[in-house]
Amino acid sequence: MNDIKKQAIEHYHRMIEFAKKQNYTDMSDSYVMEIAIGEGWSGNDCSYCDEYLGLTGCNKCPLNAGFCCSHLWMDMNCSYTWGEWIDNAYKVLQYIKDNG
Image: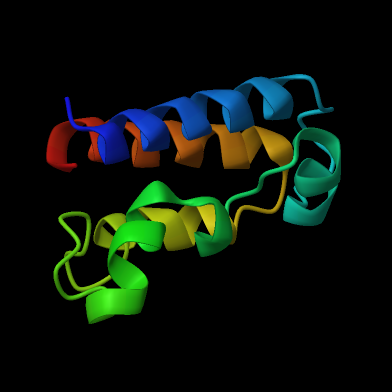
C-alpha cells in the first residue's frame, strides 16, 4: 500500500472514530471535527488532495471518477446528521481502499 493511500485510510478511521462519539441525530459539522481532532473532511486534510490537487487539479487523482470518490465524498459532505455522515464515510473509505 502506498503512503498516500495509507494516510487517507488512517485519516478516515480517525474521523469515523470521532463521529461515532457524537450523537447520531445531531447535525454533522466539519468545523467541530476540525477543532476536536485537528482534521476534517475537506481537501485540506486529504492526502490525495495534497498530492494531486495543486499539480493537476483532480484529473490525475486515482479517486477522481468525474467527482471525488465517484460522488461518494459529496454524499458524505452533505450528510445532515452524524449517523448519516458515518454511513457515507464508510462508503468513501471503502472506495479509497478499492481505488486508491
